Amino acid sequence: MTSFTIAVSSRALFRQETGDKGVAFPFVKALTMVNQRLTELDQATEEQFEIVLIPSDGQDIDHLTKNIEKYGLKSDRVRMITGEKPLLDLLNEIEPVLYLSTNPQNVKEAITAGHGAATMFQGDYHEPSDEVLRVAFDGDGVLFSDESERVYKEKGLQSFYDNERDNEDEPLIQGPLSKFFQALVHLQQKFGLQNCPIRTYLVTSRGTSSPGLRALKTLQRDKLEINEAFFLCGAHKGPVLKAIKPHIFFDDQTPHIDGALQNGVIGAHVPYGVRNE
Image (tube, rainbow, N blue to C red; front, side, top):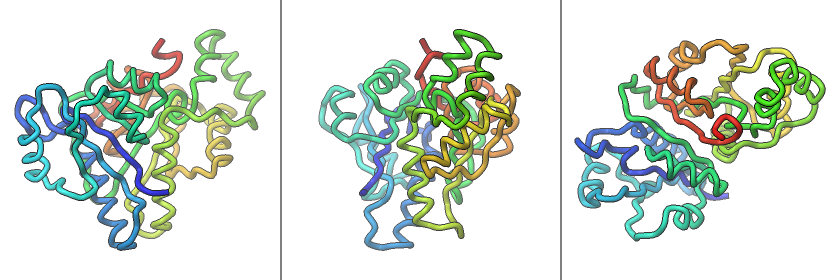
């Protein structure tokens, strides 16, 4: 296994109007910090994040290059695509574990083509610390498939509970961001328990009974340890996210993304599954 590619649109990394840091900047900066720590751990390691910047239409390449240097992102693990190719052809070529953009249509196309992707929204946010990369995930429709959410939407809450109880020992199918999560876990294992600069969080509307147990058993089956899990039983996610202070939070439902943004947390919408049909 070599590098894990993270593809980011230039408009997500830098604001087009001003050239200032964009909504994806804190996350990308934290990825470069993890890379530096990995290099300190093992000078010869190839297992790092490779950040691929995809210029948006009309953006000046020279200006983007200057911004990369200005804001301290200059690295052999940060590169920019300069050739003109259709987006999906490019994504199929570089095979990212994650693609981030402020263009909802591009993200939807990437998801449909089988890539882990999310839409980011420019706005005001509390910039997290660079010392530890913190990533928060919703469960259904993000780490897992939408199979259980589909039961809830089509048959109601009680049927959802019955389904999770009856299938508690049946693992959920992997969701669109499972490969990115697997990359995080793999790199955590390289660092070990002491001084690991990556922390992961599950923030889900599931409860602590069978719905929550099925999610945890799925992660255990796949040998994917999560650092902290919050089972909110339908409560608002915003206050919990505000306390966690993640660099990015992924959810398939826009109300939860809105709640994150209202609490100064960078939310990224994953347009996948029954909630987005």
